[in-house]
Length: 249
Image (cartoon, rainbow, N blue to C red; front, side, top):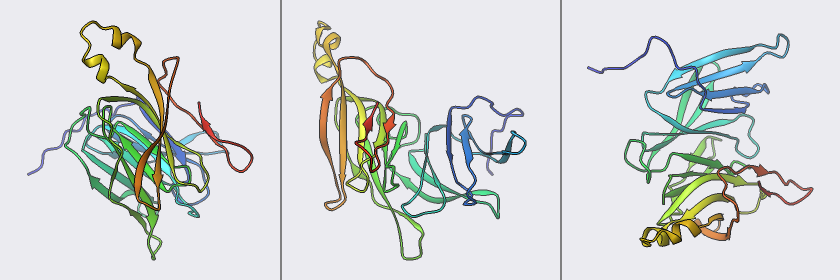
């Protein structure tokens, strides 16, 4: 026997929203999370209204949500970070009107824990890798690819852990087809933790740290770190393309 908890009235507050072409019909769609509910929406350009295509109860807490597309692909996939201790990749199947689970990789214990990844998600703009990070210490990078049958594949996790570090935000950096790179807002609290006077805590600076995934060596390296003068809590990717340099705000 299985017991399920369903409320009579669904949550209405939106915690995350992503856009993309999830059905593969060249139409822009929106996926939103409402606590423990995933909802697929499609705006109608003729009437100006937004229609709900699918609503799914996930029976868990959705902590992060991102969309990505493989290089040369025609549709977007959904990657979900939750309190299950797993990273889940979903594909929308228009014929069945369901979210189909393509991959489910377990990396930690269940629950919203500070050192179990799931709070932050970042995707390489070319869809080659995804980073999932915890609030503290742990970061994992998965390489995304396709097999001979054009099905999505996911690698074993590559660790990018750093002890005594708090993470505020993570984004993927647009580097074209060079090695995927991720930018993180971090703060090292080791000195502040060992200083009873509180001076070290008052003088601790945030750092903007770049992690590079070396596709040749299958390894994640801490490429560069720069201390910040001001305190930040959010990063925005600046696309570069072929016209100029990329970066983050």
